[in-house]
Amino acid sequence: MLIEDKLCDEIISYPKIDNQTTVSICGAADLGKSYLSKKIAESLSKRNLKTNHLTLDSYLMDRKTRNKKGLSGYDIEAYNKKEALNNLIELKNGKSIEFKPYNHKDGEKGFDSMKMNPADILIFDGLHSMHSSFLPYVDITIFIYTKDEYLKKIRRQADLIKRNYTTEFSEKISENEFNLYKTNIESYREKANYLLFLESKWKYKLIKTGYNTVYN
Image 1 (cartoon, helix red, strand yellow):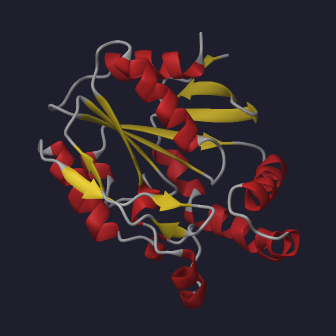
Image 2 (cartoon, helix red, strand yellow):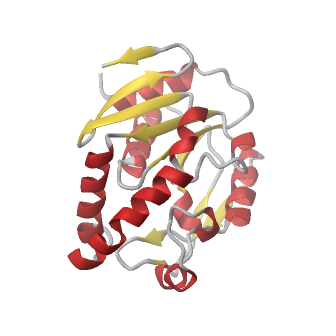
Image 3 (cartoon, helix red, strand yellow):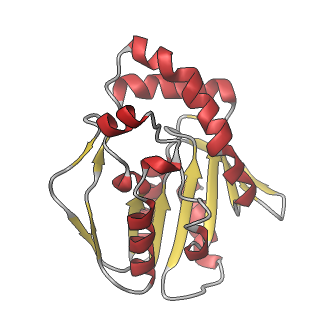
């Protein structure tokens, strides 16, 4: 069974608390959070469950501003946390929201706003999607991780392809970005209902925390 279908089964079987079930997908950059979120949304939609996908990157400062402030995406201060929280609450309360998607290649938000209407399930992904500010409005938490050396390798590749960085710049910031992940993000793992270990590209091992159940 595909990993998105396994997660889909888990989400559907999870006790429903209110009209919208909110699923947070967290973890280091470039491990497939957004990719997996879209795959889960597709799987849920096939089961006639209306599903939205909202990424915390939509509330990220543009890259030039972050650089001036000395901030990384691994810093919660790099996001408009208040706006993200308000939108999360509005969706939870059955209201529509508008936001501007972030373009990683350009390091900026688009000019056109997108509208999102309420749905049965919201997939909320991002580096800080399990921040304490958001958790009261999240029902299910998933944390993606991998081996440290593999994480560094994936990050360097994404810097060149996804962010359009130079090799020199990627190497310059590599160790600092890794240390920020360790300091600011890895601790979220302890709060997750499910862990996903990335073995290789798009191949994950699912672990249900609290029950110590492993799906290969």
